[in-house]
Amino acid sequence: ETGVTQSPTHLIKTRGQQVTLRCSSQSGHNTVSWYQQALGQGPQFIFQYYREEENGRGNFPPRFSGLQFPNYSSELNVNALELDDSALYLCASSLGMGGSGYEQYFGPGTRLTVT
Amino acid sequence: AQTVTQSQPEMSVQEAETVTLSCTYDTSESNYYLFWYKQPPSRQMILVIRQEAYKQQNATENRFSVNFQKAAKSFSLKISDSQLGDTAMYFCAFMRAGNNRKLIWGLGTSLGVNP
Image (cartoon, rainbow over all chains, first blue to last red; front, side, top):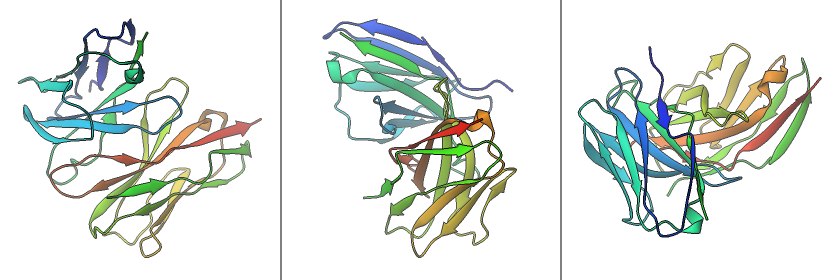
């Protein structure tokens, strides 16, 4: 069984640029959630995708957007990068809305640094 | 809105001893899930243990167990026979039951296991 993978591992961008982060969900999982974890903080929920549709969004501006593909992999896009966007971005996959689908399994994260 | 509080920013324990990490939460929901996640220096968030609010029995996973007090809204994690590999940040997290299954996190407790 393949776990959750994320790419790239880390990257450095300049303020104002755009970035795309990628996530492959665990085999059999149809739900992907994205979280932002600033240094020394707990993660903050960005949004969730279930079967290619957005299924809830946290308190993040519209320049944070996402996609989920038919194979349930996902992308997180951030436009007009700001210094405060520097963080660890975590992707988690889960089975979905039914029964035991509430457990979320995380990838290794992408460390984004904005200069 | 739900909140999760971890009042111990840092803790330490001697190898082979027992340590308890505290977590309290605030919610008006009756059906929800609670989790403890471990984040070692490698950054990957690892699910340690989970508890369904409708279950009175405390969850146990090998050396890890919880003390779930629903009325007090308390969810502590006990680690028995502590090992050096237990050194990590530990996060308590809350999730409502229902369609939007997002995790709400505490700030974490940094646990150091000393040889």
